[in-house]
Structure formats: structure tokens, C-alpha cells
Amino acid sequence: MAMLDNKIGLVLGVANKRSIAWACAKACAAEGARMAFTYQAERLKETVDELAGTLNDSLVVPCDVSEQETLDAAIDAVKQRYGRLDFIVHSIAFAPKEALEGEFVNTSRDAFRMALEISAYSLTQVARAALPLMTEGGSIVTMSYYGAEKVVMNYNVMGVAKSALESSTRYLAADLGKDNIRVNAISAGPINTLSARGVRGMGSLLGYVGERSPLKRNVTADEVGNTALFLISDLASGITGETIYVDCGYHIMGI
Ligand code: 1JT
Image (cartoon, rainbow, N blue to C red):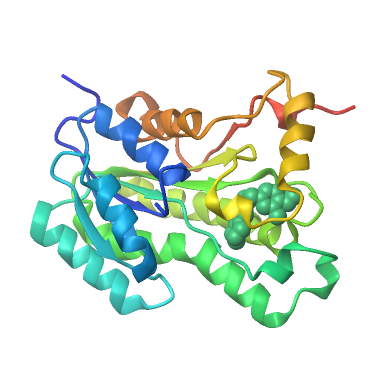
């Protein structure tokens, strides 16, 4: 029997085959999970359809967390198809490009609001919407980054959003523990995904971290996916409210 046999998941944040969300989905599918996938914009539908189509009994639905009705409709579609939900992979974030350059002090109210709403509040929003379907307990996993904890040049308002996300992970874990729902975050090292590519200086960041991390390399999306699988599986039944670093050890280093 595979680790996630008869488990149903909802995966938010697949944009293409390089996405961290897709790596998580592959790892879970290999252990027998069936999953629904959301896409944020119409231009992503074809790619997500194609990827999900390679998996057994998958579902693809639109969902833009800034439009509550689209999330409600996605949850309803999951209910119609599977009748239940056991895990969620939350791998979505957004900030205007100009907010991820220059000085944090210049962050506009709009950029701040948008980054916090899409990248942090959405975890609580999705957890609340999914709660009625998580009738047999469950596991929620979200993605964070080191900039939540330490100042990382250019990460700026996303660092503030990720701090809020990690804190939300703890508060949700405290609320949902009584329903046997665990909530954890993975703090991934930098990975060359579609989101990261839009960021200036990503290449040099990867080089810097790859040289200094204890494992002397960058982490892969598949390694993050395997950690998500662990957190979703019963192997992690005693872990909730935690942020687990999957960064080749980078964050332990001082000088
Ligand atoms: C977003 C983007 C969230 C890029 C992200 C992200 N979380 C991690 N990255 C990669 C990254 C970005 C910067 C960085 C280090 C890593 C882009 C779209 C919005 C959401 O700075 C050193 C800026």
C-alpha cells in the first residue's frame, strides 16, 4: 500500500513543469494520491491541463484567490468530484515586480496590500473554504522563503508577506489541530522557477547560495516535493505549525 492511497489533494500554484507545486504533485501522485489543480489565469489553463492529464483521476479548475467566488467554485468542484479533501499544497505568491527591486522603504501601500493578500492571507482563506471537506483530518503545506526571517536584498515586501505566512501557519495549526488537520510551511532555498525568473539577480543569488550552503549546491524542486509528501503523509503525524527548511542547509550558516 502506497503512502497516499485513497488520499485526495488540492494543489494551488502550478504554472509549468518547473513549478514547486508540480514537484509536490508528482511526489504525491507517485504515492497514490489523486489531486485537483487550480490555475490562476486563463493563459495557464492549457499547461496545467496537460500536466494534470498525466496523472490518474485529476481535476483542473480555475481559481484566483483575489476573487472569493472562484475559490468557492473550485472547492465545490472538488466536492462534486471527490466528496472529500485530505491535503492542500498552497504554493502561490505575488508582488508587483517593482516591489522586488530597490529599497523596501519605498514599498507602496498597494504593493504591500497585494503581496500580503495573495501570498499570506490566501492560506487562511483556502483553509477556511476547504475545512468542510476535510472531514477526516488532513494536512496543509505552504511555501516560504528565508527572507521571512532575515533581510534578503530585493526580497523586500515578499519577506514581510512570508513572515505573515509562517505566522499564519502557526495560528492555523493551533485552530485546526482539534480537527486533526496539520498545517506546516516549507522554507525552500532559491529555485529557478517561472516566478523566480522574473526577478533580477536570480542567477547570482543561486550561485551565492550554491557555494555557501553546507551541501554546496542549490536545492531542487523535487527535493521540496519530497518534503511536502513527507509532511502530508502519516510519517509527519506529530508535526504541525512548523517551518521546515529545505535549502541544502544554507540557513544554518553564520560566517
Ligand atoms: C514571488 C516571486 C515569490 C519570487 C519569489 C517568491 N518567493 C521566492 N521567490 C524567488 C526569489 C525572489 C527574490 C529574491 C529571492 C528569491 C516573484 C513573483 C512574486 C512572488 O530576492 C533575493 C526577489
